[in-house]
Amino acid sequence: MMSILHSQKFSISRTLYNLLLLMSLLSIIHTSALHNTKNKGHRNKSVAKSVPIVAATSPISPPLVFADQRLQLVYPVIQKFKSTITLDPLGVTKTWVGSDICSYKGFYCDTPPYNSSAVALASIDFNGFQLVAPTLDGFIDQLPDIALFHANTNNFSGTITPQISKLPYLYELDLSNNQLSGPFPLAVLGMETLTFLDIRFNLFSGAVPPQIFTQNLQVLFINNNIFNQSLPDNLGSTHILLLTLANNKFNGPIPTSLPKALATLTEVLLLNNQLTGCLPYEIGYLQEATVFDVGNNQLTGPLPLSLSCLEKVEILNFGGNLLYGMVPEVVCASLMGNLVNFSLSDNYFNAVGPICRVLIERGVLDVTKNCIPDLPFQRSIIECAQFFAQPRMCPLMWYHSFIPCKLHFHNTPLSSIP
Image (cartoon, rainbow, N blue to C red; front, side, top):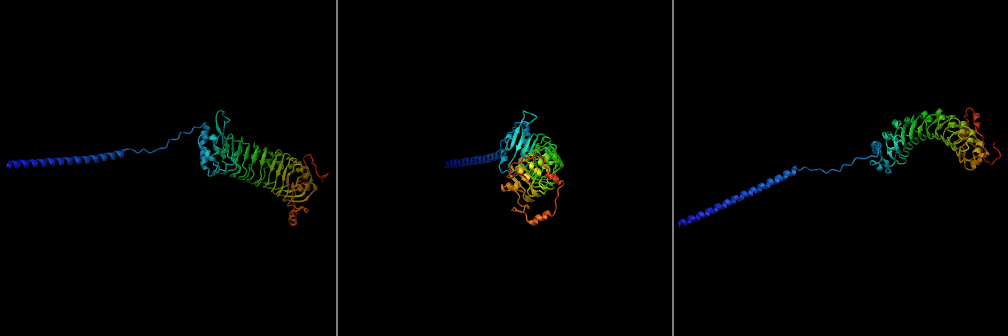
């Protein structure tokens, strides 16, 4: 009996031992599995941290290809100037993109004179673009092959750089109707290629160098600035074909040599200045003139009879001066055929004859605001008396009756001319 019990007890103990051993092994396996899982996680995190992050990059733009190295040279000059433009109402600069400079709006290419197989930026035409920029310096003077530069009706300001004198091919320069200022651009003096200079409607001031009038220019427009000097004597030696000096502050008398020098001009415009003295008889040499305008100055004396030589003239303006005397009948008679507008208003004429009255009736001759007693719209008696109380005499008065041409009278309503 005891033997049986002892045998059963041993069996139970052995079973418990095996059970405990199994549980211990399962615990060890579970712990090892957890440990391996944690290590694997740590390894994965470590690997994740070690993977470099590659940033997204934009594709590299291909380099610009230019048709000629001369165009490549001016490309940065154009782009720099473009960056200075503060207003572009017409969107012109939107076309100034890429290497095809010859297709930019306002830019024109051609073959340069020194290389017939090359392509260069030859001319610029910004007329009417209404661009606003503080200066043209660093732009126009950096275009080595430029021949024409036209930029009227914009809002460019500043001065004209002296460096433009180094442009070997520039023959037309038009900077009119801008906000340019400073003295007359001396850099243009001696530019042998320059034949056309237009700087009207700006804010240039001071004196105009006399050399400019004897330079090899065909066109010189300097009206509507603030130039203030007497007309230089060498103006009579000019070879300029088109010349405008109006709307400045030129003063002093009209040089007697001027009309002969300007004999080929069709328009002589000296209005709105501060010219003084008497009208020289040499005006009669302007026989190609269709317009002669010296309105709104301080000219005085009688009208010279030599005006009757201006057979092609259509517009005569002497209004707004200090002229006096009788309106010459010979002038009215000889110019009656072509005259469209003959203004003597706002002067001090005191008599008008029958032939000139025909022009008044036709609406051609304007003598309002003078001192003619029997005509309407004249100055007051007191105003006329005050003027004539201070005599204004012209030197060599007899020259005013000199007529340097053979007259050809048109049909007039009278058989004779007083």
